[in-house]
Length: 241
Image (tube, rainbow, N blue to C red; front, side, top):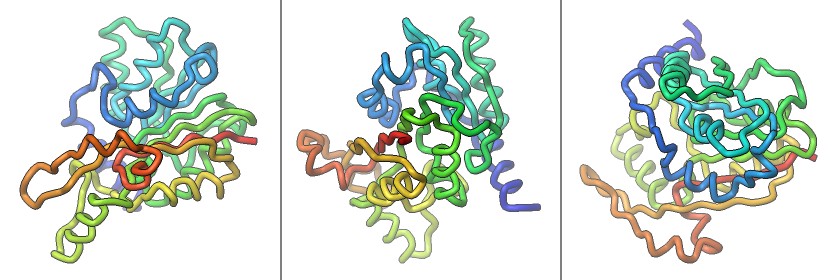
């Protein structure tokens, strides 16, 4: 059995036990919406959301007053795609093409999409750099990529180190692949894929505690121009020249 097959089977099981977020209101969704330009990025556009999970963000996009001209929601796990499509049908929400696809080997032609979105995905694939090159490949010249991923250049990253020193495996909600991503690395991967980084941001400051919920320091988000480099939920916005 290959690594990809093992990873796919693990995510099939992982998604089966998770609920649908009807409001698309996770911290990374809120951060992405801050940077999403609805007239430029969504209205009448050809959009790919890759790593769509159970389709929370794609359903939100399809329900905009001026929806995308074409919207593809793709995920590695068929169970996630099935769950998202079923939920959309129950809500009589159309306008979404649901696909099973690997972010490191996307089944789309070059220069297909005007906007590409990816939330909390590149940290869960064996080769994030391949994912960035694929996202850049399918993006049209002049199109925008909005990508969120955890930023471990802060207290949560120190907690990962603490777990490693204690011989424990750090996991994000039990996911089988958990790469160490940091905001400078995410920016660098986007640039290496041939994209021009136009913005980066991050929110969410936590003090992890062993065997206890982390303490959130919300006041630090008031000075994001300084504290974004150490916040957990990060976004990079990039354009294809």
